[in-house]
Length: 365
Ligand SMILES: Nc1nc2c(c(=O)[nH]1)N[C@H]1C(S)=C(S)[C@@H](COP(=O)(O)O)O[C@H]1N2
Ligand SMILES: [Mo]
Image (tube, rainbow, N blue to C red; front, side, top):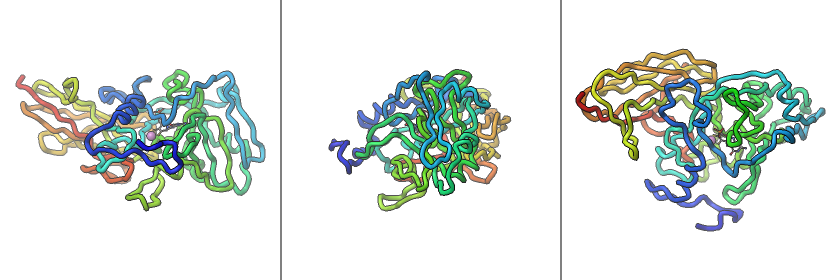
């Protein structure tokens, strides 16, 4: 491997179909959801997926201060006690990593090798962000608000704090929350303790963890995680377009029981309730989920969604006959977007929302 800290460092090359030690080590750090929890509206704490680029900073809530800096007329800092005293709101929000599904995209790039599991729904507790930005009085020429995390490291030879930005228009459109709680408990260190933002309806990269600073800028923010990655790109020369809202997607709770290492499923013939979750970005509802059963796409029954930014449950009864079956699920949202059967190509394997396929071996009862 070449020097990863050289200013022009490239990601290591990949071998198609074979994962390196480094990729396996990345996967060990950034665990995914357990697909067997997909029958639940709320992902149990501790099984929510994780994506942390650098080391998890271990911050102390007692001395943590969130600073509003830069082009504000009334900049200020807030302690965690002051933040907790603000009007609070709790919302279930489905978060999905933009890299979810990357291993299904070919040729692939060297990054976190997610299959299906980088998604989950938690009840996030915090306070709406927009009133705090107002209180700090952004100056007339403000173009961007940068959200900076305490974590620091290198990617492609470039040292930086993890940081992302949102424009004033995006702040007005999105229900961004400043969050300190997850499922009724304080945030865990790996989920951004003591403070993060949640940008509902967008892929997870926007939801900055370990938030220390919000900086108002009179230019566009140029941080690595904003301009050098999280863009849809067709090739190296393509400047690309920023990744924002989550694409329509669904997953099923795999029926039956698994083989330990292949995760293929086994069950006895008979009736079984196949269930799962479906979601889309930007607060758009799910209109339909179809499930491929016995070679036909059949419409599943949808359950209520708990919140505009939370996923929708679905279920369908299956009369399973002996044999090997390939099941799949496919969601359509209220804007008419349907999941593709094949992975859409992106250079970095972003936002693969192709249908979820599960192989089930059905034995004679
Ligand atoms: N400071 C910081 N915030 C971050 C990240 C990070 O590495 N550092 N990862 C982002 C990405 S890519 C995702 S998908 C979500 C994951 O949040 P979770 O680990 O709580 O599930 O956090 C986002 N916020
Ligand atoms: Mo992510």
